[in-house]
Each structure stands twice: as structure tokens, then as C-alpha cells.
Length: 328
Image 1 (cartoon, helix red, strand yellow):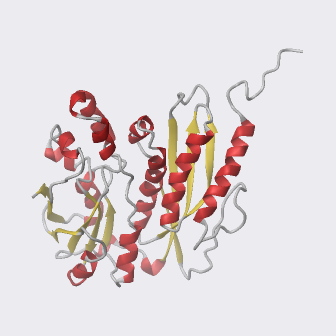
Image 2 (image 1 turned 135 degrees about the horizontal axis):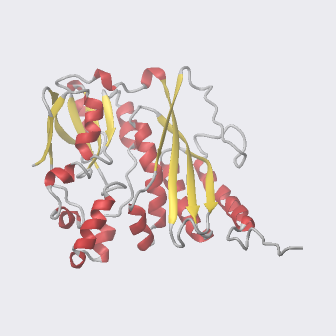
Image 3 (image 1 turned 90 degrees about the vertical axis):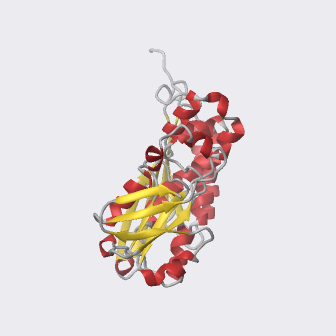
């Protein structure tokens, strides 16, 4: 008989993976409070009962953590990676007026490290629990030779639902409407290829503390959306400010209209050290520049929208012409 090789000898430990699934099952149970799966966790697919909705509309989103992940691994901020993963998808879903109901993750590793993966999942659970979103399942793939040792691949997939009447319609945006900005907690999870390039080009300017000061988790904006809803405000449009910055993300919802937006100087840890090496136009087209979420509302709703959370900013009004964004 020819020499036989086991799957474990090939670099994949099925038993360890099965144990990890059990550990994750206990952890993710924290996310089933206000919302529950339809059926048991751990089957081949997850379900959610939509019978409480009269006219449900489903929204989906997927995203990753991008090259920020390299620095999160370097500085041992694995929980932050899990939070970023959730927020990047959930925030996109929130822009539609939908509530996030389920989230799934994909984790690819070269060699299974239960402690590291559990820490990533802890971050996922923290942010899912914060916005009443059920961690419905996911996939952990051990891929020796394909994923480098010490590296992790991450993808996240969110599912949301809304009543048809509650769906935000950017087609209602009109001249005279007001753009309200809500603060970011940091650079969030886009633009890090440029950040890393700057730090590599000027290594003596950035300490470990400087880097960590910019690595805060992506903020969830469910509290803003809920606050608007509680205040009886239906936004004309909402935008999650990610790659492309304020210009590109707002152009999606302005429908060819313009605005002259004034954004305060972004004071965050070492961010100004980094921005000193980036052209302002490039910066606004890459980073959120301190504004991670923008809501467009009718003038009569401005006061309510400004009072939703501390730090809200009146950025400008919708008008004719081009979109212009500048620091004041």
C-alpha cells in the first residue's frame, strides 16, 4: 500500500476547526436578544422570520477591512478588525433605512489559531450586539500555502430589512435641503494603502502610539439612524463615507445636484502628521476627513437631525452646480 497522508499532515486540522465552531457558537449567542434566527444556529444556512413585516424589503452588503488589517495584526488589535468588518457592511445597509438583521463572516488563515480567530469574532460579536444584529454564521477556511502564516483574510456579509414605506429614496433630494455630518471615530477602514505609503516614506515621523491613535474601529451609525427615526425625521438620503471620501459618496445620492460643503479641520491623534504629506484634494477623495456619515434632510428637520448625537455638523445646502468640499 502506498504511503498515506492525512488532511492534518497537509496542514488542515478538522478537529480543531470543529472545536472552534463550538466556541464561536457560545460567543455569538450574545447577538440573539431582540432578534432570533428562524431555526437553529450551526446548520448549513441561516434563516430569519420576516412575518412581522407587512411589506419587507431585503438589503444586503459585503465588505472587508482592507489593508488596515496589516497594521491591526502588527499591533495586535484583532478585536478592532472584527468591529471594522461588521461596521463596513452594516453602515452601508443603514443608509437605506433598513435595520441590520443578520451578519455572516468569512475568515481565511494559513494555519488555525483558535485564540486569534476567537478575538476577531469577539469584535464581530461586540458590534453585532451593539446594533441588534444576529451573527448568523460564517466560514473559517484553513488554507496552508495560500494564506501566509500570521495573516488573516476577512470578508463580511450583512443582511437588512425594512418596510417598503420606510426605505430611504435619494430621488427625493431637492435644492435647499441641508446636509448634516456626523463625526467619525478615526480613519475607519479605507484609505490605509495611502496611510501605509506615507508612513513607509517618512518612518521617523510616526511612533507606535501615533499609529494606534489612528486605528480606532469603524464607528457604527445605528444610533444616528435610530435617533432620526425616534425624532420623526425621514431623511431624503444617507451616505456612509468610505472609499472616495465625501465627494464620491455624496455624488451617489445628490442626483447631479451640487453643494458647497465646509468641513472643520480634522483633529485626530497623528492624522495631521499624515495629512501633511497628502494633497488636500487627494485627502478629501480618500478619507472621511472626520465626517463618517452624512444625512440630507428637509430644512424643517435640521434642528431634530442636529440633536441626534453630540458633534453633528451643518455642512451646507443642496444647490445647483458642482459639489465642492473644503476645510474651514
